[in-house]
Image 1 (cartoon, rainbow, N blue to C red):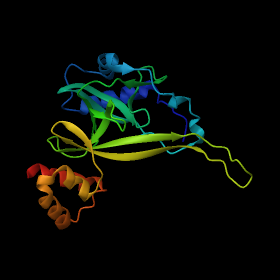
Image 2: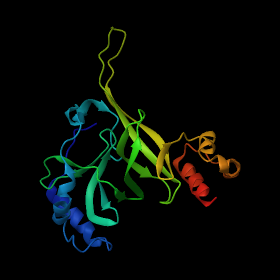
Image 3: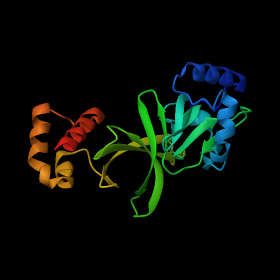
Image 4: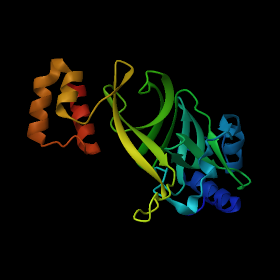
Length: 239
């Protein structure tokens, strides 16, 4: 992986301002990128994980959902805070933004009821319980419509440091990032982790088990495919 580099801020401002002008739905109160960042400044958090002390030139894999920055619209509730250049770091579970001076990254604080929309994706903050039962806040990709039951995808990333070979017959292991996918379903306002398997879904909706089994068979759904799983959850919402 190449070292983290930021584009000159002048290019960012030019590009984002141009895009803002083209977005017919852009809020009138944000006429320029600098105004967007003035408004967002209170939501910025410069305290990030020590991932940035890693020797990026010698690491395999990536912690990012998308390596390149994407133009996204930032919302809190129904209020839009304009368009920003962002990328999602799955290792630190943070939304990284260009800073105005272009010298370093800044990350959005986790603000209740916030979300970002970019391309055809929605990245939204939810409260959930981790593997140890502790309540956490994290970003999830919304895979289907906004009504319940809602299918979410949690991207998690593990960093494995480099390992020196112990014997002459072994090879050194390079440091690497490995991403893992976890599905969650929002049911009655709660996030429930669920395996992408027919048995697990039926267990979560036992009263609809017969219909679920028939639908999976008739549509030949493979639940490990995000689109197929989302299609099933949308169908369950109609029952």
